Amino acid sequence: MTNHQYLTNVTTLKLDSDTCIGCGICTTVCPHAVFVIKNKQAQITQRDRCMECGACVINCPVAALDVDAGVGCASAIIYGWITGKEPSCDCSDNSNGCC
Image (cartoon, rainbow, N blue to C red; front, side):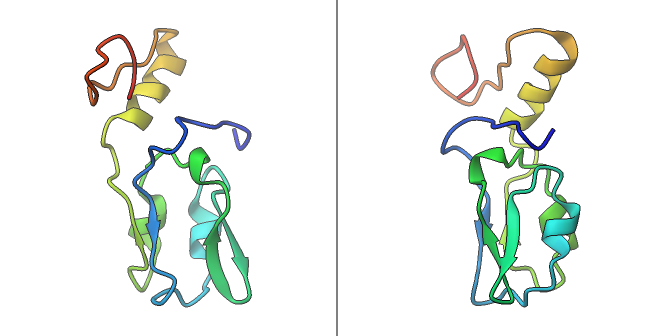
């Protein structure tokens, strides 16, 4: 699944690089390879692959990451894949689709 891209420029993922200690846990737990470790620090390289699952935030030992996990878009897209229906997360004025 690492080739999937979700919605362009809508993820709430944030990395506080001043707090990051470069432990690499985020690279291990992220199911979509959003992070890399470079120069002993995490970097977000594939932001639009983030499905806002929250695994990185929950596992970061220094709270250098933040994301609004389960805000709707990722859940809607996954539900669409499972059911074959068009995703709708109800987070925009466009009621026909997601965001």
